[in-house]
Image 1 (cartoon, rainbow, N blue to C red):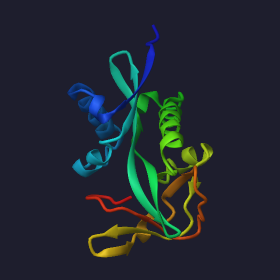
Image 2: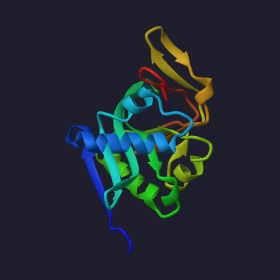
Image 3: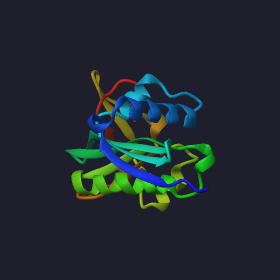
Image 4: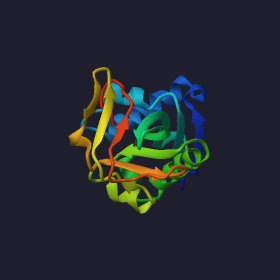
Length: 180
């Protein structure tokens, strides 16, 4: 018997405690190498796409607003966080379903989409039209702009309403935990 897949798009404020517990549990399973409290916090406050198979959450992703500095401008970015699909459900298009929902929101509300990708996930995003940022990255910290060379080559953008020069510097706003 095949389970019916349901896709739900909702703001964090619209999710109940059970939904949030299910999302965090899924991400802890997907990111077995460690989902920190900061990582979890980064997924909150925006729009979530949840893929349910019956009563089980099998896919999740969120899009939160961030400010990125590029070319002398502060850009409103839809930043992708917490994308994951349960291991036994991968390869069936659920990740694409999550991203399609997040990209739809990004296209309607932001200057660009952005995300930090692992080496394993980069090809997935590139195949969807995301562009690897080729220039240096940095963060606007309480001490000023600080280079983030460990993130160079990991950041991807989805160009939307503003021209981007992918070889120039891209600076993210400050947050606790991983800045990208």
